[in-house]
Length: 113
Image 1 (tube, helix red, strand yellow):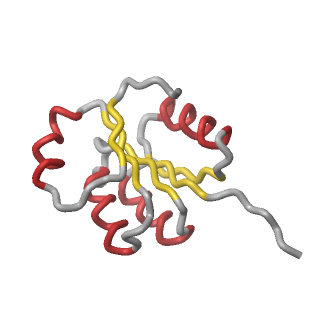
Image 2: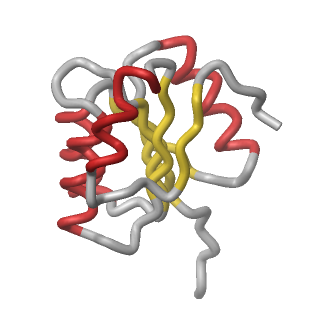
């Protein structure tokens, strides 16, 4: 028997309201959403669940999204990673000199559409 399972998305966000909003949206798009509240927890969840997509905030306690991106790329370079931030000005220089790039970068606030 073949069981059709939805793709897994790891959502890493330390702001609870954004976590709930994005989680519901990703589930509406057909993802089984796994959540983590910071970068360290996010990488532990990534190693355990092997999601097919990661959406992560950049500015978080216990490891930022750029460090998480680096660790994910080392473990699975083909996993798509979308970074989200309301602090793009603070991270633009890091993103510009970083050899490891996210698949997409979304600046807060944003429209879900």
